[in-house]
Length: 405
Image 1 (tube, one colour):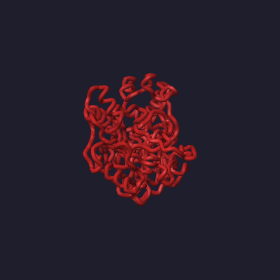
Image 2 (cartoon, rainbow, N blue to C red):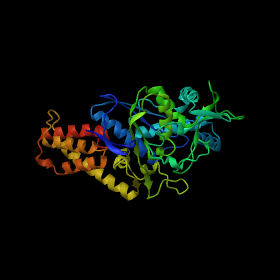
Image 3 (cartoon, one colour):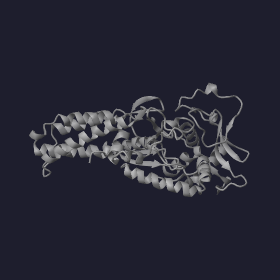
Image 4 (cartoon, rainbow, N blue to C red):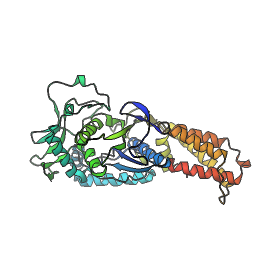
């Protein structure tokens, strides 16, 4: 049975979806004021593997992902580049979609822009205002997180540090990995000269970053999500906010499982533009890496552990993948596609893959286990029907990994 580390509870739990055969997943998408780097894609690929493995395990999966195209950073970046916000974000969304396809990622069933869910955000805010969980202050609306029982449970926030005097945080996001101990903004009221705003029942303005996920989820999912995913950064000032907002207006939990992917470092350091440590897919393509090889490197690890990039580590992973594919080609030459027989080796491959993947999606252990098995095969003595069975099994497994064929 599939077991996953649930951030809500901080322990490995047996996965049981809300519905027996259908799994609803929501994953935090990119902030499209800038282009996604390979660290972002590590998280998106972990989520892709999760959805694929659930399908391999027999579930029907419906996945939503938001595109954050309204936020302070987008307005600032557009101004800096002398573009409209729409021009800026559309360019980055187009690039993101191309890179998703390049990396063989399945496109989520729902991929809305935050700007398409402004009315839903306004409706949520109205309900929070009526329940006095949110309040107006100088044309903005703020959420008081202390009114929500269990606030900070995802992160494990120490509420004894919370200041007695009310504090308000006016920006969508703040730099660094620290908490803003105070009320957070959920609606930016219109101010004279603002270029970007919507007309709603709240008046003129725009939704803040932390109301956007709830607005997208409320539009597309009307029940508890089986899984909610994102990068580990989202544990700071985001997912606890999202949970508090949505569970304040719904009489049921937002999600049953919460999963978070750790960082990808470059040369042992967190990616930073100022240090020149930002890497994009074409940087790896220039090093003669293929799409499959980039995908493999980014999934070849334990998603909850920090990962590091260097050309040497990339080369080691690529060598391993190439060895795997070389052995597969030799097996394929022996195969007789007219009749596939799934014998002992096929069953061992399936068992090894499932055992490792069932323990918190251990892709690295699963792949290494598969490689050990096929390396031990005496291909010259292999029965053609057994070879076909092995290839059939590997193709089924590769529906999850998508690096072999």
